[in-house]
Length: 112
Length: 114
Image (tube, rainbow over all chains, first blue to last red; front, side, top):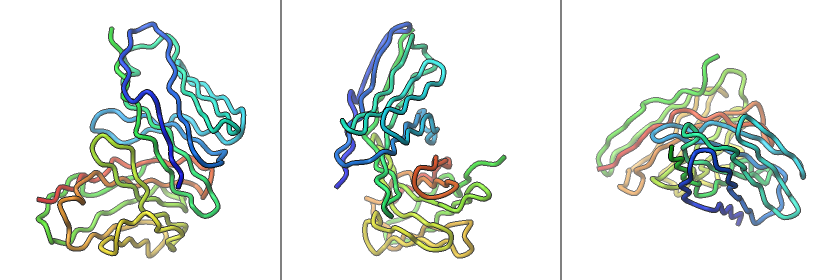
């Protein structure tokens, strides 16, 4: 059974600081997705990572994938209040099992 | 263009009743997924359609849950004899194809079983 673990689950940080969210998964996969969810809202796709060593950046967010370590990171640079949200990573293992398995999410609060 | 839409946005029902939740995917997306999200948790996969057929229904919790997509576009998730534990937000997502394609999520239907 595929397990996806995120840490931390809760993070409070100040504006202007840098931080990294980690996503570990238990089964071989080279498909890793990051989503953002605001309170009471649906999920917004941030990044799709499809190969070992993939790195994608959008604004203050950068995501990377190490398939050998079964690890993805979401790095936040110089955080701003607008980035406060819950961030989920998700994995699919393919082979006919194309539904995503999500982590529990990282609840991020950025204080002014 | 229009995103994934879901109706109703909220549904309150009594234990034992039958409910139907509808999902209208992005036009041209052949893959459609249903997930369930409980409070404070990540979404949990229920079922995946490729075209009209359910390619993977391994996430359906029991036989009270059923989903159809008769024409390869709109899908309906059906829950019989609802239980209080079925209360959750039901999310629908669609993508251009299977495996490795970005999944776009709808706003969800919040189901409350009293």
